[in-house]
Amino acid sequence: MKQFPKDFLWGSAASAPQTEGHALTNGKSASTWDKWFELNPEKFNKDQGPQDTSNVYEYYKGDVKRMTDIGMNSYRTSISWARLLPDGKTLNQEAVTFYRDYFQSLVDSGIKPIINLFHFDMPWWLMEKGGWETRESVDAFGFYAKTAFEQFGDIVKDWATFNEPLVHIECGYLYEFHYPAIVDFKKAIQVGYNTLMAHFSAVKAFKDGQHEGNIGIILNVTPIYAKSEEPEDDKARRIADLLIVKSFLDPCVLGHMPTGLYEILAENELLPVTVDGDKTLMKDYPVDFIGINYYQPMRVQAPKNTQKPAKMPSDFFSSYDWPDKRINPYRGWEIYPEALYDVSIMMKDDYGNIPWYVSENGMGVADEERFMDEDGMIQDDYRIEFMIEHLDQLHKGIELGSNCFGYHTWTFVDCWSWLNGYRNRYGFYRVDLDNHFERTLKKSGLWYKEVSKNNGY
Image (cartoon, rainbow, N blue to C red; front, top):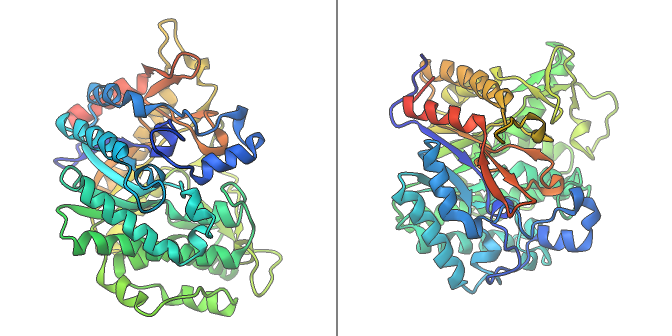
């Protein structure tokens, strides 16, 4: 039997915009998702917008009970910035009441809340000023973070600033999957830099406020794998590593930007606008922990056609389609559990063995009703096998001394997934969209309960 460290966290992750519903009610103002759905509903799967999602705003007490039913001892979700501060300045007291009761319900049930501040849901009032493109966003986020710590810090002891910041940068400014859906490498770099400084602004507010607990950031990073050991493929790997992995990990953990990244951006006229004092802020406010979201590896090869100055990341590296890969046919993503072992060793050897945890891992499957038995339970053995394979690799890394303190799945109940709506399902509980978001347990939830009870499998 594989045993995990004492007090290991077994839980799940989600976010406010993907689960709460009540998108434009109860004092909440519009986010970019609310506005984008209003402007271009045809972009969203089956017209499934952010207005209802899984209605956690109404069902949170029942959901907390369901978490205890499957042995979860921890849960990460986020606060909606546009709900807590609808205009960026004025506190929405109804939101304070909601979140306080939600978070206290978790604590009272023995579930550690890990509360994230930003999960892709930029308030529209700030987007109209340029969103993360404008330096004003750094101070605005710092004020929001300070407000959250003051309102909920007596209940919540574990905080994250951002979830997967690379996603809102890449999807919003390179690949057109998030608003404003433009293609501009220079702006993407500036958005990334301002996001990074907003992170440090929040960490500073937490540390200077002497709040009890820990603060970290959730990153979607994985070791980069090159097609071959040829020099050009390895060069592509090194640049991808700087842009995708080290761009956030190095400043957040080590307190400085990697020199190689600075050189590449300078050579390509991509350096962001900075402010005096930024380097000091990075150096003085390291995180207490890192969350790693892992779904699939990144494989690269040397690009065939390049431009200089670079216009896209593809001028530095191209995707490599490994012919021996295994694929999740329902999502189109490669399955490569070995990367979790490599992440474990990377965090141990390259980042001072800082405390870290797997903050998301999971398997999205479309049309999951195909696997429903006569009693109405989804028999998701494929999800259980996926988790076992990844936990096997994580366990190997922990045995070698990697300082991993938990494993969270994506997710607890099926949730809304941006432009994909409810196409792919991830939860331990199925959500019935045709029956008032009724939750029913899947087989994987029963399995997870045993894993948590035994602290292993």
